[in-house]
Image (tube, rainbow, N blue to C red; front, side, top):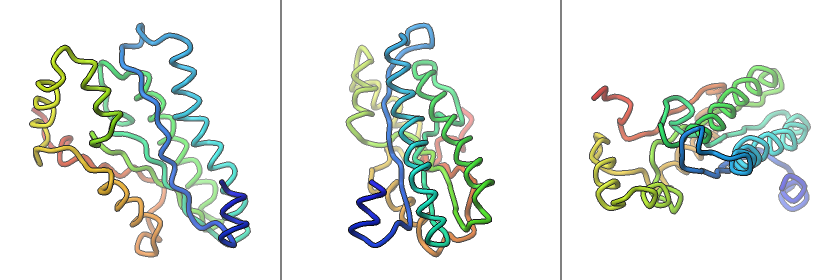
Length: 184
């Protein structure tokens, strides 16, 4: 990816990493192959992208890395324990990158979305005995009464890589339609 960007585009200014694999179940339900799959995609792929991008950013005098983590990096979910653990790991990675490479004018942030209306979200609902009821029940917990659209998450990523966000680094930005603003 980095080589193609440099060769075809003349350089690399930003990378947005959105890798995710999710396996439903409690920690005792997640077998070794499922854990390895989530770890390889949700942590390793993000780390490899960052490791490849940072030298190119340094050559250009700076750059921006945005990692799409999850709200589950910050709060727990009884049925997505290992998924949440992998997303928590990349929020820690983002902070370490921001701390280490800030003096190279490299910024790194995490986007922590709540539910986003994607096929992966539908897989979550398909896990329930009544997927339609489960979807409606969770959707109504959001103060905005809907799930995010992928374009809304992309808009936040576009802002974070823009010059309007030059002083934002090392943070987790929650985009959850107000879900975590409400205690009950």
